[in-house]
Amino acid sequence: MKVVLFGGSGMVGQAVLRECLLDNEIERVVSVVRHATGARDLKLREIVHRDFFDFSSIESDLAGSDACFFTLGVTSAGMSEEQYRRVTVDITMAAAATLLKVNPGLTIVFISGAGTDSSERGRTMWARVKGAAENALLGMPFKAAYMFRPAGIQPLHGIRSRTTSYRIFYAILWPLFPLLRALLPQYVTTTERLGQAMIEAARHGAPKRILESIDINRLADVAVGRK
Image 1: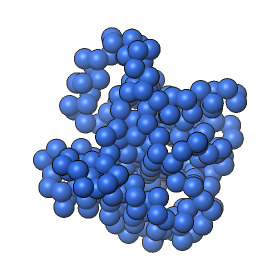
Image 2: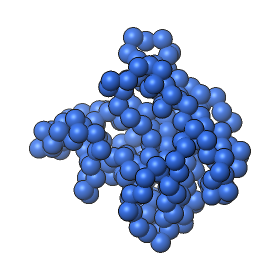
Image 3: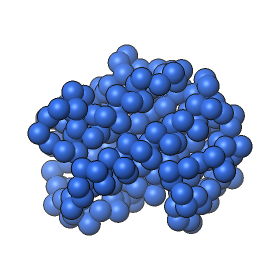
Image 4: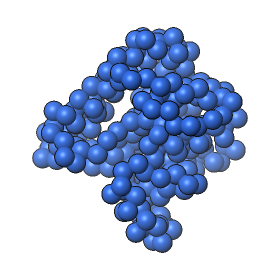
């Protein structure tokens, strides 16, 4: 399987990239980033691309892919709805349109978040905007499209969030994560299980198009069971 990754420098992007590089059935990973990350692997090709609203210049690099993991995202703190929509929806649609043009049989896995508002009419700005991005992707003629909505994510294997407030939050909760995972599987997963579940959805599909944390954990169990 050949995959494209957007957002490989973020916490979820790092997670799925790690699992892709460990997976013997994934032969190529094209990671599109704004700035070089320093990641190195024989099957990884990192493309530094500046204009995330236009991917036409790298169409040939994205061609021939079977799946896309779209993990690009920013916190909405301090942003207007217009600004947040431009980053969350417009960039996603620019990438999706280019991917569909060169890979009509592609499966896309999009990282959203718990609480995303599919109605696009709720009071919470970020949830409305994430819902708009989800709905737009689900309406496109991909082979399959899966929206992942993780809640709490325990970072493993040295993976860290780029957002300072999230790093502090995870550091405080770190001693409690094992207990939280056991008691609240519907709300908590790990970076490892999230990456495994994303690959499983891309390769074999998932039972539903929108997956919450408990669905993600179940899909990760299926992935581990195949090994």
